Amino acid sequence: MAAPYSEDLRRKIVQACERGTQSQREVAGFFNVSLSFVEALLSHYRRSGGELVRQRHKSGRRVLLDEACREQLRQWLLEQSDLTLKELIGRLQAGTGIAVSEPTMCRVLHRMGLRRKKDRTCHRTGHGARTSGTSSLPQADRILSCQKAEIHRRVRPEHCHDASLWTGDARPAGA
Image 1 (cartoon, rainbow, N blue to C red):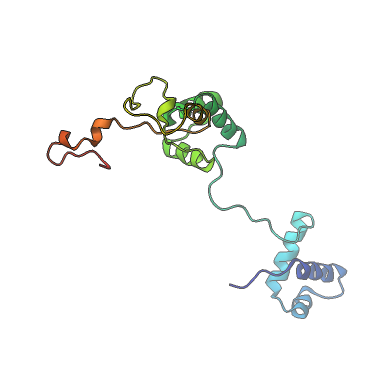
Image 2: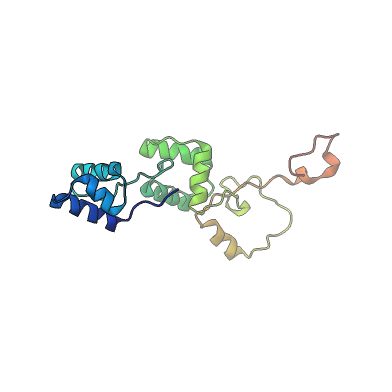
């Protein structure tokens, strides 16, 4: 595909046509462009009020959640780091009236750099955390990790990894 004509060439064509000493056909021949290009360029130049190059519109979908919405999500997650996608969607719809799907919310959070992995030290109810063994993080580091604006994934109960509890082919996913 040929490259578009430069803005400098377009400006020279418009100036030559506005001088009125040559016809559009002669200007097209002089600059070695087609007559239809000269006609379209002049038409656009007059309609747009002096704009030489047409503005292209962005391809793709527009962003559903603007910067203010993303900042509000970040604030909610700073206050309460274990909010689920459904809870975030509900708060967003109640607060702004914008309804998004779970996959959309997941993509937005991913683009914001927030993970979905649940941290077992940050649970609201205290359920699901492993009770045996100690964490590899010191207490101060566990508290600081809870204060990050991240969405965490809940920890699977320990008996899911116990092979003696499996019956036949009914193994848990990922085991």
